[in-house]
Image (cartoon, rainbow, N blue to C red; front, side, top):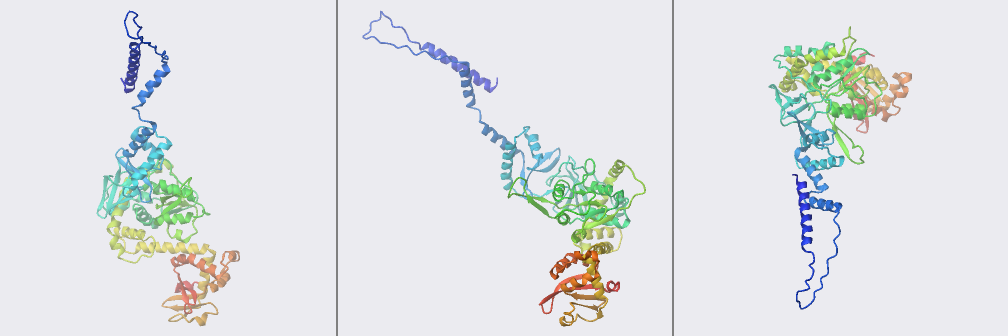
Length: 575
């Protein structure tokens, strides 16, 4: 018998006892034969009201509710039960997450995520209302503030001096790598996120030599020119580190060249997906959403005319950073999202017009294949080769870590993605090549890319023509002439130690550049000295990659400023 039924039976017994008691206490009739000193008038009791079924049920309910908690108490108990089931913590950006166990896998789930309600149902077997879920989130936030901050990773992480790679399987297998090698282990303490659509990577194969490792990664390089092989492998190795800048991998090719399939193959290598290759729009909000839900975002068939802020966000994705935006449906609250990710882009032509973005890109031209194969066949064949490809990449990751100090001491690196250059140098030297070959290769690529940019930019093109014209008049000298000798014309040029030095005011550059510009591009040139200075600062990095060093310095005793250019002698001779 349940507790409620016991209460009901007890209440019924009480009613029967009460009725019996009233019958026993009924007034007695006086005995006329009895001798008494006085006559006692006994008034009969008023007739009792009949007890209805509704009254009985109300009394039963009142009796049963004495020991039953109210709705507020039940809700509080349920919320506390939810809070006890999870281990809340704050990540590096102030987002509260819980550690949730799925099979043998421990993963981090943000409490703002829709997955949180599924975790609650799995733990408690109950569906919580929206208000109760929000109350549970409040309890978890309070508990999380009392605990230490933890790092949350997607796909790649860092455990002390070890780089880790999450395979994304239900068992929680990770790869731990350092300069001594790599091992497969079950994750115990690192917090990895696994957003929806997160694919599972196969277990890699151990490879013992550089030659075998290079042969193992060939399926990844299929259809690409040889001079792109080591740069791409170095970029993939860097993508296996969470604390390195990532080159933006850009496949350039005409329609039907297979650039999309090659980009999908790159993504499949380190960020496996379920179903067709997922691609995001090249708009600011879509890019932030994509990088928050995938490790290696893919942007397919990007065209020129990019939206405002897109190229700036790409720079943060490459070098590493976070994006702060206003929280949805709020006025002052913000949300911060980690946007550091290895990005893969495909386009028919170079869609970027900012020099700082181009300097972070690895452009890989793609030619049309002689024949085509079904996409499903290509995908399955590469999936079968992927364990050895991953093994080859892990071999070169270990080699790059082991050789880092040696490679760093060999030269000065002048590229902002210095880690990528060091990794490329380590790979080439592991393959028996000479030190400096990878750096020379990348410098040549950067110079060609800078020259292409200068050719397509109206101001940069006119500026280079102006510098060549001035440099052709340079005479040998030990130092630059005094300000008074060239202040009237606004520029001068001398030859010193095999290089041509040109100094000019912004006003002189503004006036002279118009003489070396196509008529149709005149409106694209700056019209004032101040605007010319701004345009020079914009292309300063491109000029450096093209071999022209430039700097704004004081002249005339710090009373004025002039632009100093250092040109190779051969550059001036091209006039």
